[in-house]
Image (cartoon, rainbow, N blue to C red; front, side, top):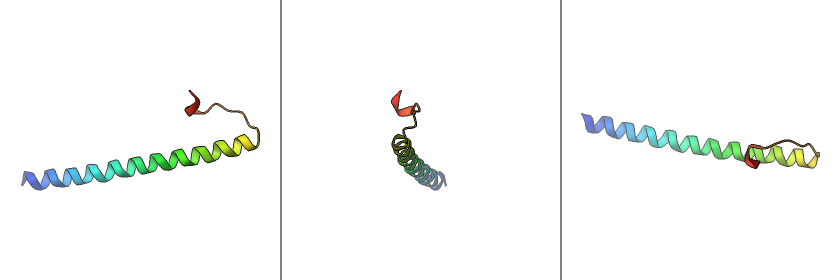
Length: 51
């Protein structure tokens, strides 16, 4: 019984971690696109990556 629980738990954790890192990478891509647009328009701002 506990083996089934452990396997389901590991499966759920693996899926949630992979989704988390995929969404984080998409957020990075979008923030870089926005930064590029601001640079083209000469808008000055402080980025979190510049700290």
